[in-house]
Length: 101
Image (cartoon, rainbow, N blue to C red; front, side, top):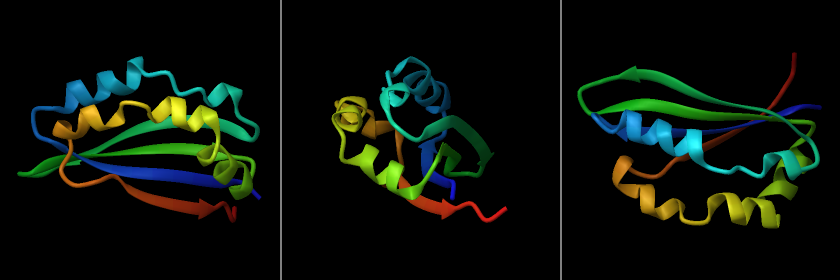
């Protein structure tokens, strides 16, 4: 069964381009990981406080995703992520989904 892993990000107004650039230029190491299928960065609506984004990755299974989160590739991909904290309101919010259809 396929699995979709998503993180929602509330990005401070005016910081959208900087946030997008972080994602465009970062090395994810996902191509090294068993079960990874595809990745998308989604941009949602803005309100008076923030612009909503979501990262969206598709995996062969939930187990493949969990294995990635415990891997060296995951550690390498997230090294230095804290330096981007000034772009966010709060912490990213994780959501995981089993694909039904």
